[in-house]
Length: 386
Image (cartoon, rainbow, N blue to C red; front, side, top):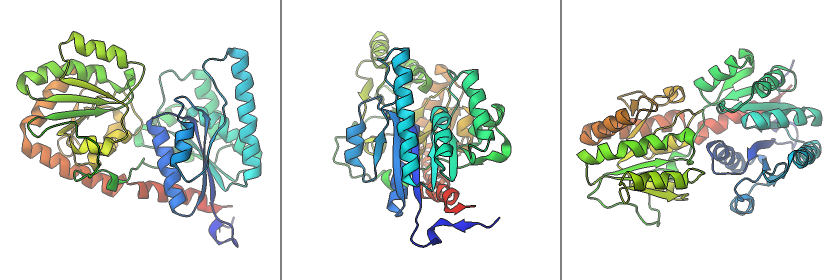
């Protein structure tokens, strides 16, 4: 069967639909928006859509981006079961209508839920290229949804599934997805946005006489910040001038604040809340700590590496594609605050080690995890129809 490059069919150009589950400050959402921006800057017609606005960011995102963003209003936590079903059905049919009339070249859906809902809609709408993606399998995902997801991906409904790391590919295979339907495309970031010579006008979080230890992420159990808080007292025994900063918000904010106060860490462990100047915070930091319990391919870790900040992280399977222990970062056992404290002290004690991690980390992102690499690999998926 002959391959036809879309961009060469008269005046037709690529038109891509990106579909996420909810509007919030998460890694998958950041990848979706960054990819949409990259497509737009390449002259590709791109639309980003989400099933619902969890954090009331829809209007802000629309004003900040040049490409169309759609909220399908397909879910509300305040609805009862009947209302939720009705709202979801209405949102799904709105999606189907948009896809039917949009004449899209292809669709890329993010997370299991958007795969489950978006790929069948795109198939019914006649969208020729239909890829789902696998960012991580959350423990809360039911066996039924895993089964349904496998059936959809393995069928004609899906062109294929994109795994964002070797680990997420292994997860997909464990779920029963056929190996020949899976492609790996690593998440990517723009290294130029993250540099130790960042010139942001935001206020620094540190002074030059202190060791600044930074962590970034949503305040939920998955991110493992409780273990970082528990490690702080031991680190402060060796480095009394060290200060910990945690950027992010979430349901555990008040719980972590109480924990910090109970441990006598007030003023030494600071919760920053959501910040829009992460590059500046990274530039001000001496060490980035990533204590997550599980991930797909963590964006905040890539951003720290791109910034040239030495990193220490939990030895979860997802970081095996990123961190080589002792070369571009330090790995410690998961859920082990004592080992985490020991690792932090070890890295802070060695300027040579920090310099090594800094140089090798940035080099890795530039070579393997840039937004350009990610964008071109996704673009290839949609350039050819059959």
